[in-house]
Image 1 (cartoon, helix red, strand yellow):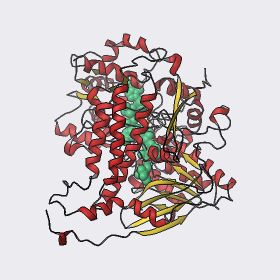
Image 2 (image 1 turned 90 degrees about the vertical axis):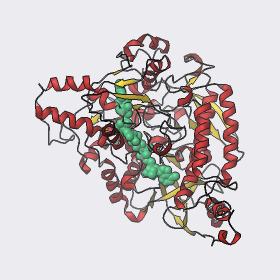
Image 3 (image 1 turned 30 degrees about the horizontal axis):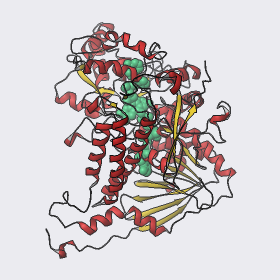
Image 4 (image 1 turned 30 degrees about the vertical axis):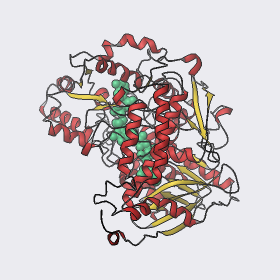
Length: 637
Ligand code: SFD
Ligand code: AMP
């Protein structure tokens, strides 16, 4: 143990900065950028402020870029888009919200092109924009190819220009939302801290758009040790959207849903371009296509099993059978696909080189580590196949997953039970969300999330104008918020030096330790990779007890610096998002998403009793969770 003198430190007192605004946007990703861009178009007389925990140029899921835009309708109709999403998410979706994204998304993609995003065009249409009728190169029915390494800087730049840098706070992490003191269930602001300076921010606002992306590292990842930072979705999306929404009392929907992507093993490279553009097949280690071999299995999951495109979770289910029954590993058969493509260009040397470059570029544009791994393993995709695997689960509302908040739908389409005034308003007055935040409407991807942000932005501006007499009243004195946020710094200051090794100290928990404990609970009891995504009532009940203890212990989190302070709050958010997920799985007594998770005690799909939304509300006054179902209204037959 070290002596007393060495532990004496000067306590850090953060400066408190208080900011009044009309519309506060939390997040700087695709949805938030869309919200800020659109909101500024509809008003010059209201104050709009955006707060991002990172630098917007490279923040959020699109940080590394993307190689495709997965939602572009083009020749398809919004009705077909709704049908596709409905089937992919096993029938329970909000068709009004999906239709709304579908009818506006192409305009958003055309804006991206105007701002400088290079979109691949079919032979003969090179140089023609989409607006001018240029035909994009489609990888699939809904997806188009882009040169997307700089996708995020391009989208962020347009937002910065629209909003002005003076209204953007970068590297400020929002810890929690503030409810109004006078009006119940009414948003009034948010508090957070700077990651660069000792400053705590208190924002007061009239309306707020919460768009902090999805949740990663809730479950133990497949990558371990020094590779643990590698995941498919970005590790810096820590469930803040769900946690802060739940804590504020917003009604949540389908939080039991998750997304388990099949990905190139260890590098987490996406598979879409390989399946759709390069037309590759994925086979078990005996060379059998698992979709063909296990086709009969799909009959158990009608009406979804017989759809023209098999739902993502069911594709996973068929792949998992191979692993469970011992016929793994599963490989993406890249050499056969490349050979067919080379043959299609008559093995023309220049064209062959271009195709090889495209294969690498798919990863270099969005998952650079996968290209690194190929190089490290001496894999040339035209010569050697690559293993694919089902990753750990992610919580998200924008890809082939649909957990999130329950929001009001568009006035012209939403049935009365799905509508309470403002499009994308949550059940908390003044609180809006978009992108990963909106539940029951997946398959938005980057373009749809930006589109939905634009929808929410326009709607929130109208809300502000129609509630101009509101003046936010936040409860506690500013210093109390500052003390609460800086508690982990204080804990470290108080106890550092008690032990020689800072990682081993009985007086506190470092964020990584807490993360590992959360990951272990979720993995082993709530259907992570260790149990092949299988859980049951007893496992879930035990997990809830362990999670409750973990939440209690989180008061002992300690942060040696501002970066670790962010890690503390991120992990606190993860616990809340995890709890929502767990409680929802416990409530739904069926296996709605085979391939995403299995309730071993209710292994069937139960269309008769469970084709409903499972919704929940945490009451911030009492601390109680309340669960109920809502009908699933089918608008399109
Ligand atoms: O290949 C706080 N996505 C794909 N979309 C496509 O269109 N095409 C693809 O090719 C896609 N693929 C893909 C995708 C994502 C990733 C990581 C890979 C590959 C490797 C999905 C889209 O990217 C995704 O749907 C959207 O980005 C979702 O938008 P949004 O806005 O809901 O989330 P965000 O962009 O991650 O932004 C979150 C923001 O919040 C900030 N933030 N700020 C303040 N305080 C806090 N507490 C905060 N917490 C988070 C973040 O910094 C960020 O700015 S493929 O796999 O299919
Ligand atoms: P991914 O790379 O898995 O994120 O997928 C990118 C896009 O391709 C998404 O729109 C997926 O729904 C779609 N996709 C991926 N694999 C398949 C497949 N085998 N069949 C149909 N669509 C797919």
